[in-house]
Amino acid sequence: GIGSVELTAHAVQQYVSRFDRKPEKAWRELSRIGGDAQPAVRAHRSALSDIKHRRQARYAMDAKRNVMLVIAEPDRPGCPPRLVTVVRPDANVRLVPMPP
Image 1 (cartoon, rainbow, N blue to C red):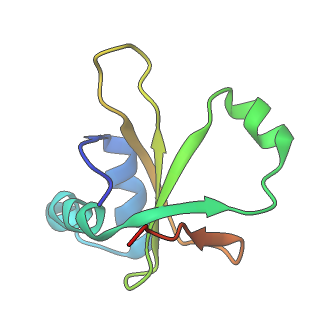
Image 2 (cartoon, helix red, strand yellow; image 1 turned 90 degrees about the vertical axis):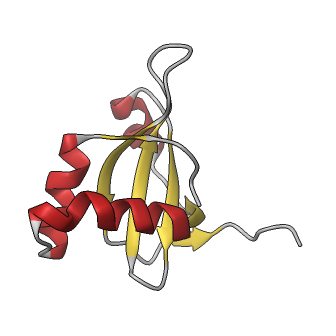
């Protein structure tokens, strides 16, 4: 799983609209997806995109459900990372192999 993160309202809204889910079930479903997701990377990422967003994100993917989570690092020390959006993974996303 992805560990403890703050689930933002924006992430819930994006999940509901992009995956045609019911709003009243979205939080619970995202919690379940977060527990099943594995670390992922985006190959061929544009340096301009990193500059535009100022802060690198980390990614996690639930391949079974075809969902990618975008997690922003905390703004302040002591705060948890934030799940900021939810998207369908594109062809450039790769799961990070887990050590045995």
